[in-house]
Image (cartoon, rainbow, N blue to C red; front, side, top):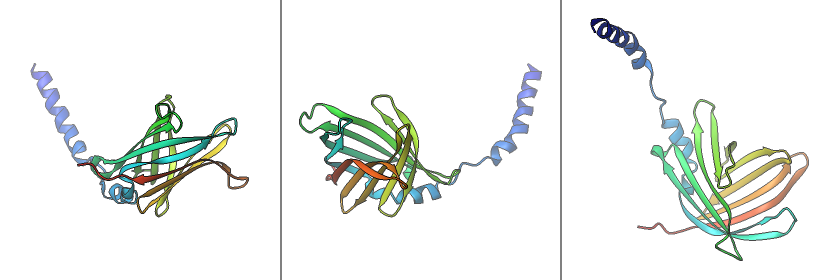
Length: 180
């Protein structure tokens, strides 16, 4: 028993200085970077359209809720979208987090969709808009969201800067009053 006690004391003595040297990252930069997206926090509702694989246009009703979490270092985005002609039929159900990655020096957009798909995508913030992209076997998909004056306007496009972009989705939401 004495050996075990001595081993524990020796272990604590050797590791304590190392543990004391390890410091958590300072959240100041993350909070400042995430502050650029603070106008998104709230509840949003509206409508939009998307092109289906057969080329027809499908209209939908949308709601998005954005919550600032973890001391302002992460945004949690929850979106639900329903067929306009049949509002009980969900056409898109997704959740994402947006955070500033201090070590990598860029934003991270992590998305989860009800069908099980998920991904980690590049996101840039430019004034009152953000852009995130994903590479697919069919090419690049780019989503651009502009926000301000209680309006959220988002478009989805396929293509590239070299070949041009084709819009396949557009959505316009308005900020909803806060609930007590």
